[in-house]
Length: 122
Image (cartoon, rainbow, N blue to C red; front, side, top):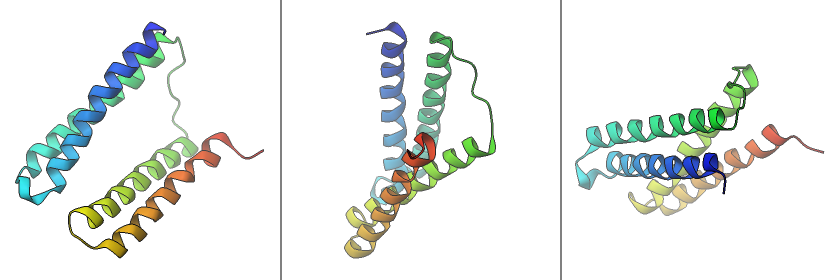
């Protein structure tokens, strides 16, 4: 395993855990930790952003160039992940099974749209 991949794996794991725990803290009302969850989620997102920057630097790749397609792709990914997460919360936390499944499937479809958007169709 290359050092750059190992560093990305470690930072990705730490950032992902912090982000996921922060979102759970913010979205589960029984925990009464909304503000702390938002802070922890933002810290996780920052660690994930740092992971991308460090990995690209270690791989000697050029910096990411902002374009309309890239911004749209990121927004689609964010909307898809949030929609999927809301569907899961509807199902598991608020016990709205049917609505949660439908919203979760919409989130999965949005996330699946990322594949042809980024890789293209042949």
